[in-house]
Image 1 (spheres, one colour):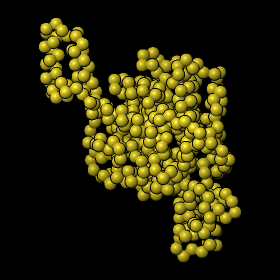
Image 2 (image 1 turned 60 degrees about the vertical axis):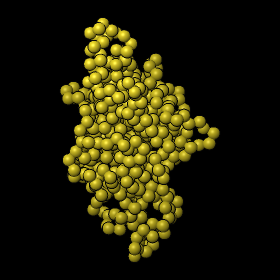
Image 3 (image 1 turned 90 degrees about the vertical axis):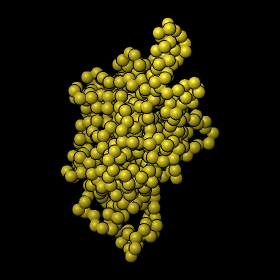
Image 4 (image 1 turned 30 degrees about the vertical axis):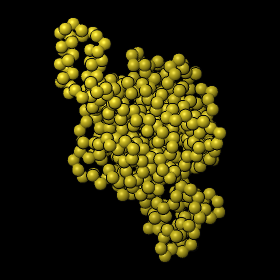
Length: 462
């Protein structure tokens, strides 16, 4: 890595500090906190932030992310940020206006401004205020960026057409995704706005319990799971004692600059130095290497897109942009390095769960009971008798034999005698702690305490 970055621009350092505070307070991985912030950033201005990986066509930084965990409901650290942005969005869409503005039709306000200009008072404070209001009304209709499927803020409805492009669909729980699926066959539906594999103009973000998402993947089939974007596994969050958690810290501070981009319809194109481009393209090649290990009929369906590192680098650089001058080249370089670390983390987790769900690595070696056992095996340690109850007419020896086969194939692990769980993802080859150590920040959170596991379904050459 290069020497320590120029931190005169505060945003990248602030992002790392804020995400570390949230991660420590709720005992969750810092990588997932940063990724959640970037998913919100993509929802806010992803259609205005782009990159040109091949030097030609611009690709929007639309980053779909679903966090899966064993929490009983949306984790508090996620819901705080969602509520902050939803509240801001609603205040713009439905502002509390003075009666003399809210009761007049727009054409009457325009005529009033024209009359004031004709009388020579066009530069008065009142005329300036009216012009500002008229301009903001034009942008207000295109401001919607988060579309909750249910819950607070769900009064914002998707009509199939929107001047600012399809907003990001906010899903929190399996019921929200099923609600989208029920309207799948309708023209202009939310599901169709996501496009095949996220190739549409829309995106999706939110949370779902780990068990629920696995079942949904099975219902959708391998060819359609890309529409739900990238998925990462997060431990159940716990507010640690004696910690101060600042409410909505990330959304209220870090995303303010992208809110200006969104409201002003300002476009930001990400440009990188040749060495940074080489690093990003190497990550794209690594994804291709991983996909080559899957059966050919599953490769195209396994990941939403292969340009993840480019999208993350563009979003990070946009956060470091002052709205006028190009981002500092050294800041861009560090954004690229952080994007590659995060992309490695996401791809490793996503492909691990894809392989586990669709048994992509060993289709010919598993029989009916083995397949059902692999799909029902939870991510936490579980006793043989508890697993046996999930099946009818299966004795303990048959259950144990199936579990041992899964262990031999690297699909499960025996954490303690007689207790099994689904094999967790292998640790990524690039670690956030290595990146953060250059900043001299505390890098270990309570979620880092689990020992590294070996998972032979995720290894790839090189």
